[in-house]
Image (cartoon, rainbow, N blue to C red; front, side, top):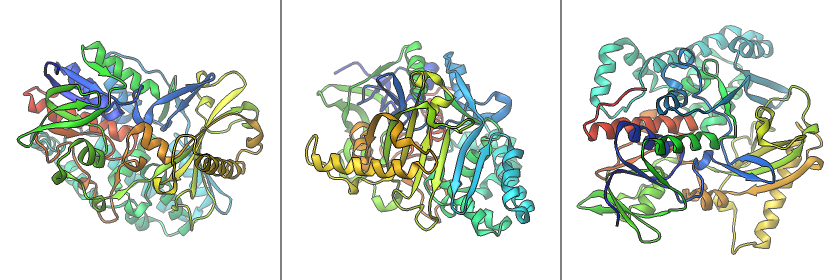
Length: 503
């Protein structure tokens, strides 16, 4: 048993590290436990034979300069506050889409260049295209004017309402809208509407009809303001910098220290018990686990379990991490790509292919003459059965899926199969094992008809227990979980009587 601290954080994902770093900087004593040997969760890294691979995310918002993204450039502002540096390189294209009927479009940082690509394909929709993306930009302009804070703090909301009454009213109206509903007000062409579907699917894992317009206004507009950036040294540079910031101000982060239970007393969270039996106590506990892991595994009281039917369970991923010969990439090849082969199956498990080659931007990630290539598609744990380590049936199934994914990707990268020097395969069971995520899932998604404010917030039904990560508002994505960490830090600062210093 250790001496109590102010805040214990369970999980060193980006959300958990963000709340720990901001609270430690504010003067609270934090202690973070991570079951893995590295930080970052779904945005961590691993190194093999001279290659540095992104375990998951490789496309990052939030690094814009202060005059580019308002309050949405949270990474930049957080690292400035902590006094730590993360060097990044800008990516001129967010995603290059390869769609049926020879429809290709690159979503450029340059907004006019992107819009003109769409208009060239759909000249009769020129007016509607501009009007629709202008509506998205209006939402972005509203949100970026607000300081990042907790929607659970009535005082914060009251201040916003007095300072920005018109913007708050307009934003409240936008929360009831979906991306698909708004798109159909301006656009009629079905192929173009399909493109807007895949734009949402690319980051929200849902089609436009189920994607909140407010979320889309952030992501699909900010790519033309703050833009997409890649951290030098891979995605893990973000987590490493947050850990450095925590330790710089006296906080502790312990790796390979899995939490087995959140300790309760009279309906309140009071501490944690690690798998090795250690007990640690705090005045507030923050869980970076999914809502199902938090209230199905860590909180042992069955009364708090979350019904799986309350939300749609996000899928997991089947991933290939490849080291390849650089010669297969043509001149000017973009970093991030999405392939849709058939609109009838693109939302099926495994129906859409995503891949990225971040070493095209950051040469530190691969040896000379080589590149890293991350190819992935949706998957679910139920597809896979691993009876024991090195199960030959499981390994053979992995290889069949990998070979098929490589074959499909060769439509865009001819010769890929003959250029592979190194190959690592991850299934949803890999995600479940290394990230300790329920079914390997990427958290709860809103069902069609639910509004963005129905996402769980930072407070939980258990007193003194808070949540961050993709189970919380605003949802999936690195910048979204960062916002959840900022919001949670705001809420806990208020609990401790500290004035929250806005980013």
